[in-house]
Length: 189
Length: 189
DNA sequence: TTGCGCGGAGAACGTTCGTTCTCTACTGTA
DNA sequence: TACAGTAGAGAACGAACGTTCTCCGCGCAA
Image (cartoon, rainbow over all chains, first blue to last red; front, side, top):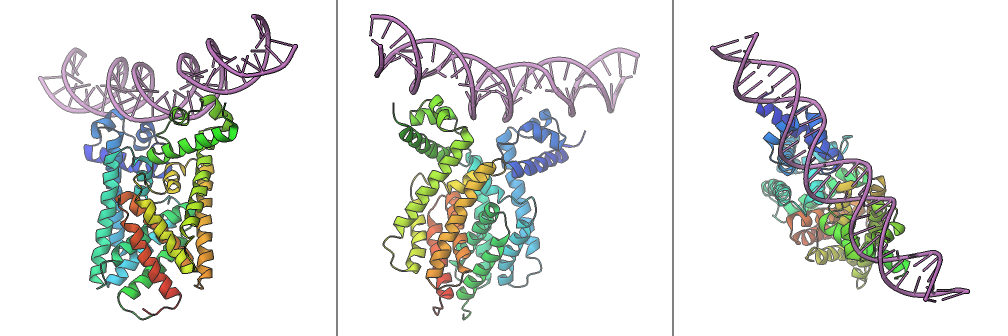
């Protein structure tokens, strides 16, 4: 038998892909079982309920997002470049064939009204992203008001790209971010 | 017996409130029946299926959104004012106690992967909004690239406000829109 | 008044889901 | 080899859902 950590990761990985592709409520635990290759009994010994699994999947997604963002901003040397790297990261993501919007927004829209655990996990992820942007804005020497504006652009790009089915929003949001950065850091335009 | 048009409106109105508050899949047809005061038999003579009702509700929401936007921009005399009125409209909406994000985004996140009819209705609404913004941008004498940037700000404000549970995003998005408008129309900053 | 058609209330049906239970097969040990 | 413990496969269970059906009462023509 595979050890607990491996089984847990297999379940989360499988559930993440299924939930993201079809929506949380459209995926039964049987489908998770089949995809993960872990018996229902085992799944329920690892997670107390489906809600528990959903929250674990969201935490897993948070980790993926954070590390993806970090590696995308790796080559950047200035705070301004790191800010714009966010939108390049989005651009690359939007072009992936499996892209179907932000999993946090989707899950919040689906379950936010009924599950506070889900709501909390989603809110925490967004708060953490806004904090990340706020640090970069401070490093760039721009006023703090710029940070939520950039975060809103990133959020809007994700939903726009998801609904339209095209990656254009990343480029458009990036252009807006450049303009806002220029103005906030005193570049003449 | 109430006439067909009245019954239809009662069902759509009741379904709209329930779907928006709890999510589409969390609301059974029994709950719609009770809230609307229309028998299940009647509902199924007015709508072929729940999917059909969902699409009708989305169309109803499109009408509400369009007329709300129109009346919010009523007092504005310039294109610039009409553009900024979008964000004032959002601000007022975000403060309503029932606000729970954009119904189109929520429904798309919930059912977009499984129902193409829902997907189409959502995409059509967003396309129509972008067209509205594009007209205002043209009237303001700004380059066309500004329009999708403003639309992205509006989308981002809606999801940000929904998840954070505060109306701040409207004000922040409005400030960003002002900056972008100034730059695009050649105002020195 | 009698028969008839129609609509409302909600019971019924078949399906699906989350969760639990049962049975069987396998592993390691003496 | 015999046995104890555990885990997998999936049947089973109760609830909830979308949809259809049945029954009953009401309004209306002759």
